[in-house]
Length: 108
Image (cartoon, rainbow, N blue to C red; front, side):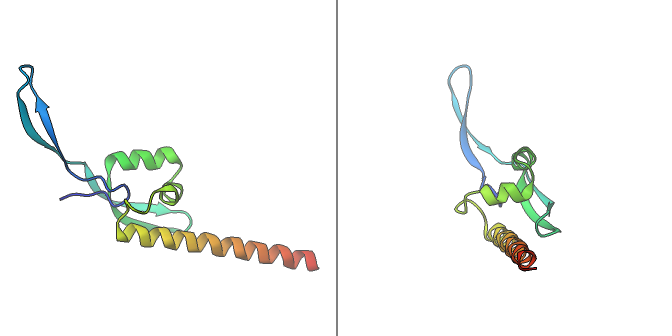
C-alpha cells in the first residue's frame, strides 16, 4: 500500500467508535502523492512519494534539504537515503572547497 518515503507513514488500522460504543474496524490511509521536490544543494528536482502532511512539514522546517538532513534514517526509504547521502556529499564538498579557497587566499 501507499507509504511515504521520507517519514515512513503507512496505512493504520483503527476503530470507528459509535455513540453506542460499537467498534468497527477502519483503515486510515495516508494521502501519498508523487511529487518533484527541489533540492537547493543538488540544484535539481528529486521525485519521491510523499504524504501531504509531510509536504506541510517540509515547508515548515525550511525546505527539502533541511528536512531530509534532520530526518531519522530508519524511517526513510532506500531512494530517500540515496538522496540524503548525495546532499551530504555535496555539502561536504562545498565546505572543503571553501576552506581550500580560504587557505589559498591567506597564503597570498
